[in-house]
Image 1 (cartoon, rainbow, N blue to C red):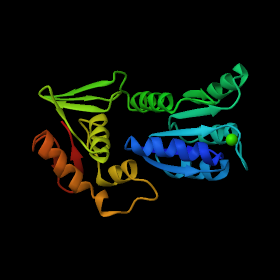
Image 2 (tube, rainbow, N blue to C red):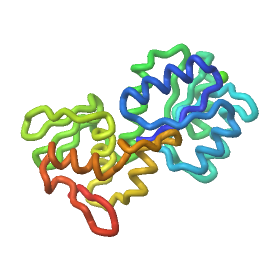
Image 3 (cartoon, rainbow, N blue to C red):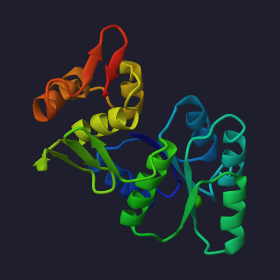
Length: 216
Ligand code: CA
């Protein structure tokens, strides 16, 4: 899952990005509203964390302009616990909000819910034959036994699972699993799919030659 965090406070940005990457997300960042809007319009993010008080273009403006073209789930960060800010944010098209200072675990939980809802998945449990994903806990079992996945393996599996029944192209996976700073060999999609098949069964992920991957 690929996220964008738009935040101009360096310490907060660093902390949030570290927590998200530890959870296996790929994360792009912007430290002002202009760059944030540009990235939000150019990339299909799975969710965006948007601060309201930003240089160049404030969060309200970023959100309003983004909503003319895209429905990417947006969680706004508001410094003031003012009802009017939250109402205005939700009216402008935000999907959720969090008041600073916040516990990063709450941010992670809210993002998981936003991403799930964005993919049309209201429950946090996903049954795919004998494989079961818990999207809230980010755990996987096969036939009731826990399966240990790396962070990247998990996000590849989660993306395929949320798009089950359809075809996910390699470009989709690259766009949603890796971020702007990623270009190492460990990023090879084939390696992650190979490892997922070893752990979840050879037929669990189908390769459609020339098209991409699918979970039926
Ligand atoms: Ca700010």
